[in-house]
Image (cartoon, rainbow, N blue to C red; front, top):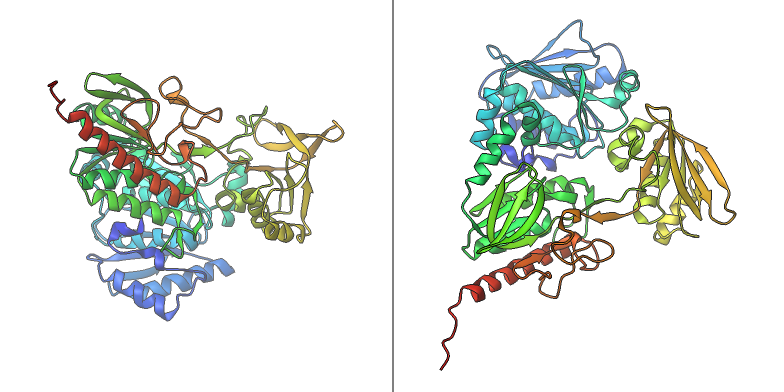
Amino acid sequence: MKKGSPAAVGEPLDRFSVRTAMLDANLKTQLKAYLERVTRPVEITAFADDGAKSQEMLGLLADIDALSDKITLVRGEDAARVPSFALSSPGEEISLTFAGLPMGHEFTSLVLALLQVGGHPPKLEQALLDQIRGLEGSFKFETYFSLSCQNCPDVVQALNLMAVLNPGIEHVAIDGALFQPEVEAREIMSVPTVFLNGQPFASGRMSAEEILAKIDTGAANRAADAINAQAPFEVLIVGGGPAGAAAAVYAARKGIRTGVVAERFGGQVLDTMAIENFISVRHTEGPKLAGALEAHVRDYEVEIMNAQAATRLETVAGGFQLTLASGAQLEAASVILSTGARWRKMGVPGEETYLNKGVAFCPHCDGPLFKGKAIAVIGGGNSGVEAAIDLAGLVAHVTLIEYDQQLRADDVLQRKLRSLKNVTILTSAKTTEVKGDGRRVTGLVYEDRASGESRELGLEGIFVQIGLVPNTDWLKGTVDLSPRGEIIVDAHGATSLRGVFAAGDCTTTPYKQIVIAAGDGAKASLAAFDHLIRASAPEEKAA
């Protein structure tokens, strides 16, 4: 199960749609039922002033206080940040604080924190729980989030849980929009951004396993040893997105030994906001669907090896050997490649230098950090135009830059974009350089393709929305790839290497959609099973 997901407490907390600090009657009823699981006292210490946000926070906390006799709300003094509140339990050494109002995507983080501080056991693998409790040292984490960021809750929830389990771990979750001076001083230009003991630690979505791998020096070696000890698999799936999950379920249902190696279970789905075209599911969000995919796979006897990157695939006696970045190796009779894709970069000077320093990819996550600033969106397809529309409501000005002579987005999106007064559209424009002052983005240079003239724009953020690139670099020379780097597959998902199949966005299958990737994964799994049957069938003797 995806760590920190709503399902981690047994029921889907994501059904809570919180838009204001005061909880309505229906939400209070639902929340009261969850808080009945609290088994020990919880003390909420609020730090507030007379400001509007402080009053909203106090209203929220008062509502929560009234829902359980095990929860006590008290006022504190001399906090580093106002508004904020700390959660603790008498007799327990817990240092867990929310600075700001954890609403939107972070409301689930608050509810989980209340339950865990209140003694409700987390549904986390026992080995991970033991690893967290056994960590020695002092770890003071600070996580900056935005309320519209769907990547942030995983990090906040993982660190909150670690703070509950280990007294040497402290965590403060900070709403960057409410503490702009800090954001500016620390030059934070993407969320989630995590500091450890006052120093930059990480940026972007991280699971508990990934955090532990960075702070527990022996974790990587122990994980590699455990992987090396695995017996050979009949089907080994590389990638944990919709294609990989579907392949795992179909393989496991055949009763064959199945393993999944994934850098992060859920893949691109984790970065997707609203999903309204997954057939039979009217509406969901990426993290919720990713959690459901992993939970479904875990219903079967599938060995999931998360936070592991593959680096090499080789043919060996009896099948294949997969080498991981850790040096660990796995063997399998057949392999299904479902490695997905990642954001395509511009590939211009300055882009790598200013990643997370003004160059961003997720407008929903990082947009609030650019409030009142001038930014650019690169790409005139649906994703680029949608990003420009969303950002126009937050920033001072948006410049949309499209290489082609016209935008490629749907007409309805174009009409909406052109109606916005703080948007400039540049077509036939080729971005050639990202400019900065060594610390952050200050502008970009583009070529007017009609005149050949080079021009410079002064701005503070660049959101790149120019499509995806398949995660197949490590497979060059192993299986046949298209000029775009996609794995070439036939109608059965078979690759150029007998016994190796592929599915999803990393392949030549057209139309990169979740439902297509899932179907691809099922097809590849059935083809792999058919391959195993035929490979193990006794040869007919000559007459």
